[in-house]
Amino acid sequence: MSIYQNKFLEIKKKTNHYVLVFKETEHNINNFIEKTCSMIDYSKKKGTKNVEITFHAKSVETLSSLLKTKKNKLSYRHAQNIFFNFSNQLSALEKQQNSIVSLDINDFIVVNPDEGRFRYNSQIIFVNIGKILPIENNFFVLKKPGEISNIKSSKFISPEINNINEIPAKIHKNTIYYSIGKLLTFSLNKDVELKEKKDYELALESIAESKLYYGIMRCIENNPRERYYLYI
Image (tube, rainbow, N blue to C red; front, top):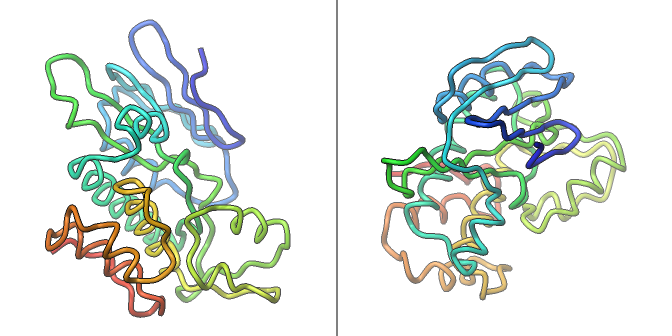
């Protein structure tokens, strides 16, 4: 039974395990797939074009589903898990001159571990490989109007993506730092409209002065060259 599917990905539920299928893309994302495997209890991986990963879990859901369960307010531990896992996936991609250009809530799945382990050990991982693009000298080069329109449709885009007004558009790879910072802030507190830095400070009051707070605030600088993805 398929429980999640798009053009680039399918997750199937079997009798006693799940199968995650990454479908063929034009980009080399082997490092990304290996890093993703390391985050889940997988037993085997097969295929070179369509890669099938068999793994065990109590359940699998989308991040959107988890947010509904949590009344649209993610726990600190879950937000921290996204921050760490996404950082590891980005690092793996950049080793092969790729990165993620945009993201949405439904681009993440939540893998809840088998019985005997606590729910807060759930792994929240980015899986929409359709949003992985090559980078050239630290920049995405966006040449297709349709591609740009799709990227702009996300509610978590950076200011520079929002301000694209010519093609081709060169966008610094750190655009995704702003996006993940905005998504995490929204997931922790969706009641504040996020436009300026002070809005983020207000939305993140409940975790103020924490390592995660400062990690997010480093991501949402307006100048992409001044953004850093650090947890210190």
